[in-house]
Length: 294
Image (cartoon, rainbow, N blue to C red; front, side, top):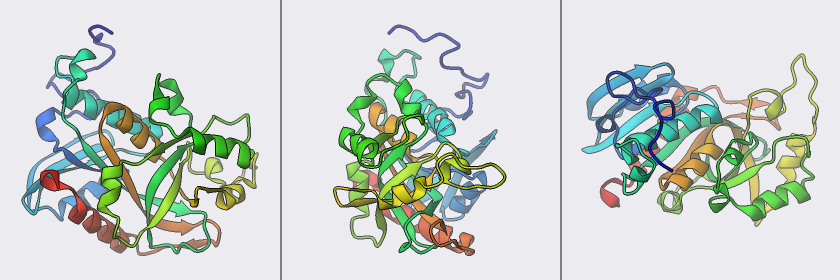
């Protein structure tokens, strides 16, 4: 591939990449990703010093230091489509400053940890606890648009979902991807639920919520809850993890997702101490970041 067209990778007048409106110097190699723009300021409250704050659309960014180490908090908004924009533009900033595909070689390696919220489908997982996503299954189909995504996908898990669960053939083909092994190892001693996460392309029907419109597959959540793969269960729904893992893996970055459980979809329980639980999770992540190559 040759030089990118101006319409392939768009830059703003100030030199910032189109949607994020950031330049490489404004982001650290350790980035905490959150869906909610308001959560960026919560993370900023833990930092020793703030270098700067930027905001464009739903993408709010704060970079500063935590215990003397540089870290960035960046909001992504909701959905795998938003996550694709974030990962692609972050990589563009740090990997090909000359705006050519060949220039991507030898760029910075980003460590991307998503701190989010989710709903569990397992009865034994209480709202207010934390889930670490060892693997993610994308129900949106986005990664299938990328050539050679097979290199980061888990064909055994994909096949098991298709055959063992009799996944509906008229829905997008699920794809399965894994977290960064090195980031996973950082939380080996932590008391977290670990398993498979579903990244849904919507909040309501794709996650089994039925309001005024009927569900086409009302028993899908029960099938997901009963599914087993190499001793792992599907633990929860959220809406970004699969693309975070898939694109990060293809681009050579490291990624991990940890979520606060707000709802138990099987029991109907809802967690009401959101602020307290999220601050605890943010502190846990900050204290486990692999600064200085550790």
